[in-house]
Image (tube, rainbow, N blue to C red; front, side):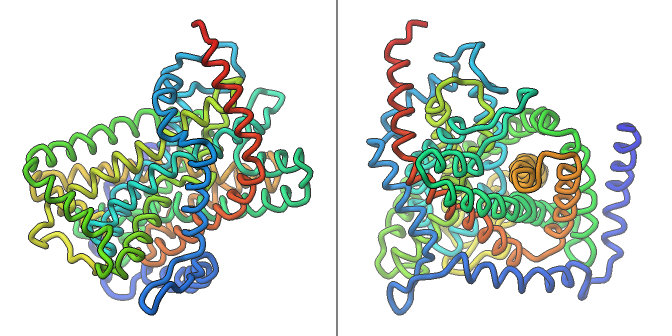
Amino acid sequence: MKKLLLSLGTMLLCTYGTYAQETPVSQGLDDRINEWVQPATDAVETVVFYAIPLSRDSSIPLVVIILLTAAIIFTVYFRFVNIRRFGLAINTVRGKYSSPDDHGEVSHFQALSAALSGTVGLGNIAGVAIAVSIGGPGATFWMIVAGLLGMSSKFVECTLGVKFRDVSADGTVFGGPMYYLSKGLKERGFSGLGRVLAILFAMMCIGGSFGGGNMFQANQAAAQFNAMLGTESGYAGFIFGLVLAFFVAIVIIGGIKRIGAVAERVVPFMCGIYVLASLIILLLHLDHIPAAFGQIMAGAFSPSGITGGIVGVLIQGIRRAAFSNEAGIGSAAIAHSAVRTDYPASEGIVALLEPFIDTVVICTMTALVIVITNFDGSIMAYGSPESDGVAATSRAFATVLPWFPYLLTIAVVLFAFSTMLSWSYYGLQAWMYLFGRSKAANFSYKILFCIFVVIGSSASLGAVVGFSDAMIFAMAIPNLIGLFFLLPVVRKELKMYLEMVKNFKG
């Protein structure tokens, strides 16, 4: 059966290029699907991104204020755990304080890798280019700041994910905000509130899995692949979506074990190649790096700069960083909750590495490459929204590595593929929280997920990005409310873990 499925997939891929090129150019199925998606996107964005006017020319979404404020509070409350416990995080992920007798399913390193497979992806490639095109080089600075502060948010939510996880009779772990909101708040005397927040989060998580974890990924992968083949209109996106959905289905039908097996091979390989290519360009332009950082710092604090000055640039940086590393969103707690440990704070400490790797390292590399290669304005015009983030990043890399667009096409498809696999698991956990852990619930979600792969590949970037951002950010509201109620629990768990580390004799 597996050989038959793979043979069918190969046939689809072989016929894809010829069929797509024969498609009519005007008003194809892609355009009709976008016409259906756009109204829903506009309605959701209006609610989620309710903006507070700061001046005549600028405003800031309320949800961005909430995320940033929460990250600052968590950082101060835990005495800069993101900086002071960085070394401990390295030692913990290396397994220095682990025991084979600890409860759970995966090691600290495996849990971190699984979570990274869901965050390291097209947000690091396309999202950064979009942020820089709108906010200019200064958006890079605020992405870094958001990444550093987000480390504290990730610490809090992933500690709680382990603390309140649910383990079934066969040893399978179920965890994430759905469980620490309902169980954690119940312990603190807010049972009704916790239940409502858990249900709201689960609903938004499902939407996020269909949006940012699926449609956005499929959309950008389709755009890059079709651009490389010269099949950018008509039914091209739809056909690509069918092919991608076919291969996604092969993996996710096998469950979390097959998802993990695929992700642990794909993600490290492609991350390594992408980082290596970035380093090559930066090393070849060492003399331009100081000027690039000069543009970044000047743009970050310019009172009358691009897109509404400091506020406008800050909004773009924070928004893109949050979409990339998902700190405060709660999604990563689902993956981290399966870790093998008897100390919940140990995984919170490990999780703070995630925004650092995703945003501070990889996103900054992408931004630096774009800024350095755009000194002459050939890559993009700052202040003008870039319609195709992947294409902009591809142009930047191609100025030094002419063959890179082909490699980037492979990287984009594989990054999108691995992110979709992880988010299918996140969404499935939320789906089963709402509808039960039955085979029917399992199968129905996976069918819907594959359908949204096709929709995402076919809709335009504007509709997909808007829907993706709205769903991802909407998850933050119920999650952050619960986190504030449960901060004393996290503090107690951190104290217990630090005491164990202090007395550890290895």
